[in-house]
Length: 188
Picture 1: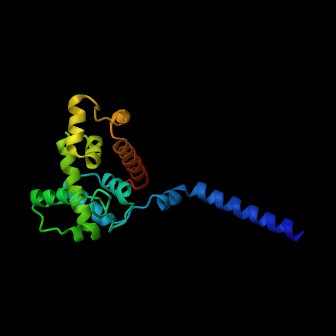
Picture 2 (picture 1 turned 90 degrees about the vertical axis):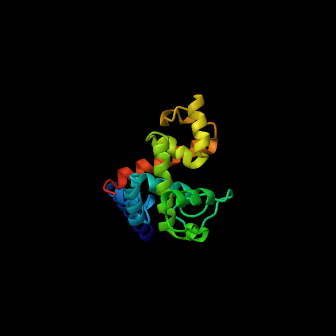
Picture 3 (picture 1 turned 30 degrees about the vertical axis):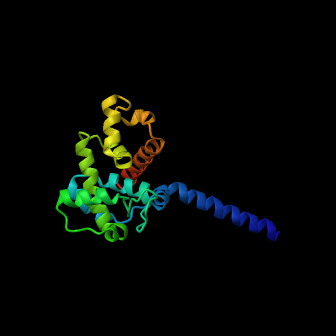
């Protein structure tokens, strides 16, 4: 009798949990797709006219919101900026000196530089944010070559034509997170 009662209680608890997950799927989704550094993302995105959802999606794809990371290729920090690119951004944007340590460990610095750079790429590619995301990963020279030679047209529906597998998957991942964030955080 006790065994049957325990099984029923467990079944009721399981059904209750499943019901809560379905009814509160937004809660589950925001738990699975959190956004950290919201204020820094909002401020930097606003400063440079970039959608905060896009900045958050790049961060999620690059480091999943972890600071202090260095890529195998040498990219630094939350938004994985190459040191030469960071130096170029600092010069062009007129920022105060930014050290590699600041870029690596300070989320606000990485987000500011990454947002400025993303805005620069969006404008470089005639407000085509898909091409800008590809350029964030593969470099603007590669993307410009693909567009100029007709290898890729810069459209998401033709992303399979991007010749670099890493970049192709990167664009798909960023846009996936971008769409998730737009749905979950509409008033970001």
